[in-house]
Length: 267
Image 1 (spheres, rainbow, N blue to C red):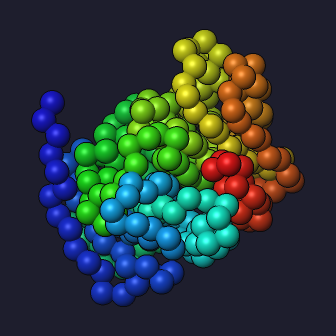
Image 2: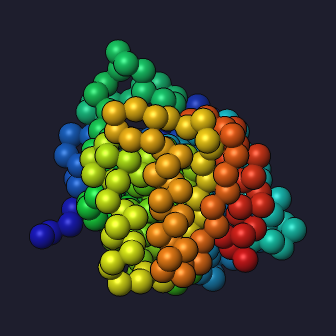
Image 3: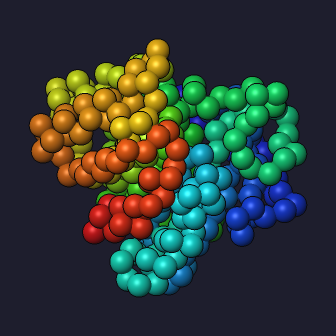
């Protein structure tokens, strides 16, 4: 299959959370357009390969409870994390353009492709990152090819998406961070605990966070699903950490432990 390069780029007129956002039309997901942004931490050397961290639902990590650029800049300055390029990417929507600033899609807005991209168990989303987004990142900063120097992160459906990318392409990402991950039967994600127990080990380091008051609906119980994930990872002796609390389906608890969880993931 021939991989196409990005077919449309456009700079937004206004920055959000102090970073410049761009729009990208995907060939891997035809008909979709999405926001994305980059942030370069302190201490980056343009002549040396840098670490990488990619965030799904990027606008929520660039601001909100996480404030990833600010938190990570401080950790890099303190020597707790290596200098890195941060990539914030939002799910695609079916539209010709995105006139508004990045944010959660409203019900009356363009049709979102978020669940297809994030909840589907396949390598398609990893393909989009590898063939379309990361080449753009390389134009900003030389990137390390070592998967141990590459992390991928997300919340809710973005959390299972982060895991799927690393599970499918462990040579691309070796670190996973999931907040309130949707390891439920939205599009078959409930099978991961069984797959972890039976399939060959991947060289992954995995951080999971969830709360006892997370969602419980027709797709499954989020807290129970994350507990099953943690149990399977423990059974196979994966390098993992599972942080629990009494939180609900939001980023508040994940934001509170964000700095320490980053220290653990990048130790």
